[in-house]
Image (tube, rainbow, N blue to C red):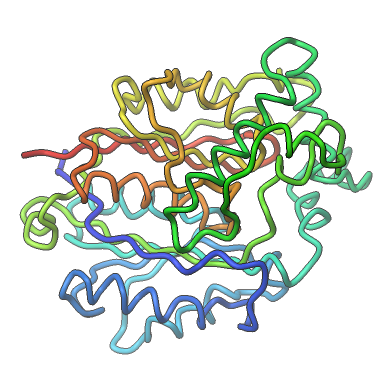
Length: 351
């Protein structure tokens, strides 16, 4: 196994709406310049490019091909794409690096959620025969999951509000966050429901944005980064897409991915939890105790760019290795309805 590390990370500000096109070019060009410039390299030094996005969200076929304009496809490049959060594109790039074909890879993800009705768009990932024709609202489905957890004594509305309050507070130190500020749980609990028992603060905001990560192997990683975030575990697990066959109050795929990736002993975890109760659920599934700092960036409750948020969680976790504030961290991404798929990336710093 080759030693592979995250050596660079950049993301756009998380905003409610942008004026740019849905192919992400306007968002991507600045962060490509930022991450490559920070490493002192150019695009010709990148051996492989891989992206994550959604043509359906963009409202156009092969929108990811248009996004390649942000790279510049001449001279010819090696490029790939996944129709998922770019955390899965990172996994593809990691595998390619393991094969020894390349020494560097740049991964990026982008999404313009403001271009459509996200709550309706999300129904298109459900069972096309039995569920999607009912057009279940994504917030309503999450509300069912939250209610089941409450009735089973796993969390309550105050615990959920406390997660939101902590997210807003942590995001004060994140200049790219969409939502931040000091607010108390009692203040949040006084607000109206949007999908009982969920209030607006329990749900990640609609966000436009993009993120990018550079991976490098072995000596190349040491050359590019003073303190690389070495990937020691990278695992993806999937639960059934059928709600009737799943216990929605837990996540077996998150449990399995966390164990396989070696989540024990992490000091910082960035969790891709679009709803407050899902952060609580993931903490339990991944075995994260009170000694683990969770979502110091504010997490996706402070800004949730579709198809880039999971990648950004890995980048934010790696940043704690880069700055020396942690020696073992965890980045998590989810895809599918109600935490159906879970990907865990564990990284460590070495002296």
